[in-house]
Amino acid sequence: MSFSFSASKTDASGARRGNLATPHGKIETPAFMPVGTSATIKALRHEALEELGAGIILANTYHLYLRPGEELIRKLGGLHRFMSWPGAILTDSGGYQVFSLSALRKITDEGVTFRSHLDGSEHLLTPEKAVEIQLALGSDIAMALDECIETPSPRDKAEAAVVRTTQWARRARRHFLAKENSHGESEQWQFGIVQGATFADLRRESARQLLDLGFPGYAVGGLAVGEPHAMTCEMTGEVTALLPADRPRYLMGVGRPEQLADYVALGIDMMDCVLPTRAARHACLYTSEGRVLIKNARYAADERPVDPLCTCSVCKRYSRAYLRHLFAAGEITAAILGTHHNVHFYLDIMRQIREAIEFGNLAKFSAEMQARYVAGPA
RNA sequence: UCCCCGGUAGCUCAAUGGUAGAGCGUUCGGCUGUUAACCGAAAUGUUGGAAGUUCGAAUCUUCCCCGGGGAG
Image 1 (cartoon, protein in one colour):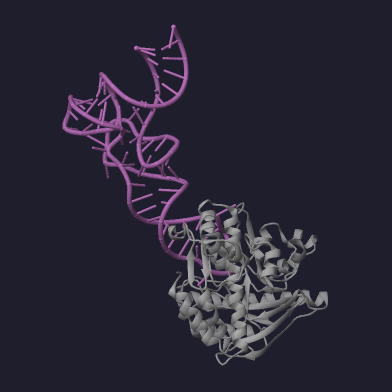
Image 2: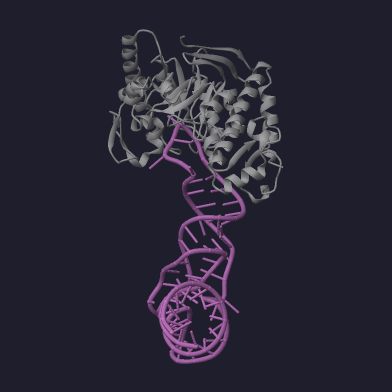
């Protein structure tokens, strides 16, 4: 089975309804990818993930390189087999760690030197090395190493990050193609990542430079790192306007439930975010009526489900009172149930978004959902 | 009956004469390509009681109350 992507229907808004075929299954787009940095969606078993209908998940090059090491995973048959996940996997390159681990790394033109947060050892991650690791992992989609910078950033810093990201993308693409040719047929796709911070012209320039490198798909990175939602949308729109219609667009690291449809309307096909999983572990549950901070005292004797409109197995069975108790008691089951619900909620939003695109009424869905969401929990 | 140790925030405990604190708990908030079952804020005190010494007492003195241990 080989790769392909097609966006067959387009909503008036610019939203695309498509299909992404991978060696590990077909994914209906627009798609949300739960984040499993360390080869697991924290507190969620793969059985549940499959039940929830996740077709593709994220894993992280840098973290798996540090532990358990990509060579071990290669020996054990690759990441899919190692973690026993039959669906598709996209691996982030470590570019986000350039941002999130800024205190532990140094950037040069050659690459990024990280001081491991696990044992303090030093590691040089180059664009080539990131490709090597992702080939060893055998992910379906490999991301090129990029330089993700913080917001707000001055223009000169954003310019430098664009230059570096393009140089790194060129090296990553060349290295990837050389390896791919030696293998024969394509077993993996590689995406390039657009940077440019909050500067529209830099975003456009970054996109044009990456287009020259001929990636099978393109990502928009360095957003949702503190800037207002309107800015995220503006930058995303600048980029998607330039990207080829026949290739998937991936907006990295977004977003809040009420924002997902906005990104889809800008022509985004794929998104990922730690919010549903992390917030769940921190007792923040997303519902059709807004966020429920389940540890609040007001839920102590509330026998209703977390979300009365939700069809997930947690909402069918357990009360707010019970979930609040589990969180208050620090029980591990709290994280498991909360994560299950939140991931269901995100994947269900995406299902509704896809359906709305089919019927050409994404804007209506978005408005209705937001109105209900903003009203807040009863 | 005597001797010793102790009594400080809801809990476990700091502070040895100089502005009563911490951790946990409680309440509330934040998390956007995961260094995050994490992080932040707030509320909560007649320092067991009474009387002394002192410019000043959780701290020193005396008596009483309560808990633990020991002796007889």
